[in-house]
Length: 104
Figure 1 (cartoon, helix red, strand yellow):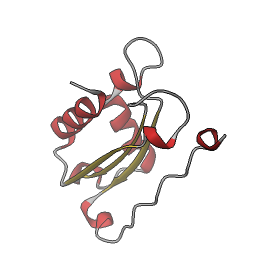
Figure 2 (spheres, helix red, strand yellow):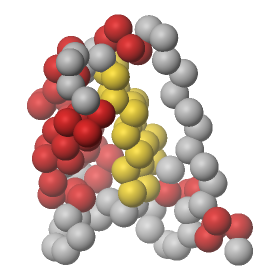
Figure 3 (cartoon, rainbow, N blue to C red):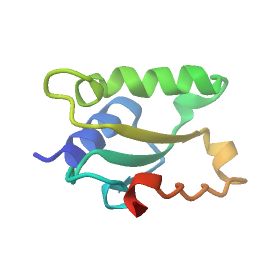
């Protein structure tokens, strides 16, 4: 199972999302890694009443193995866009910026 599949599986199991998008943005960044930069858009009822920090902490805890700086962690960057269902109805997800190193 590749990194993207593991991320998506863990997120689905833990959060039961109403909406999930996982974008592999590694091609937008410098270096040879093909599964190192991701953007996660996640909408779930569990985010109701939680601050942005608490939402991020919940996702980080769920993806701990993939995010470890040592060992089997392969993800270098994970952009998180986390919404409650009500917030999602009024949201436009921003584009990710281009990596400066990619254009050198």
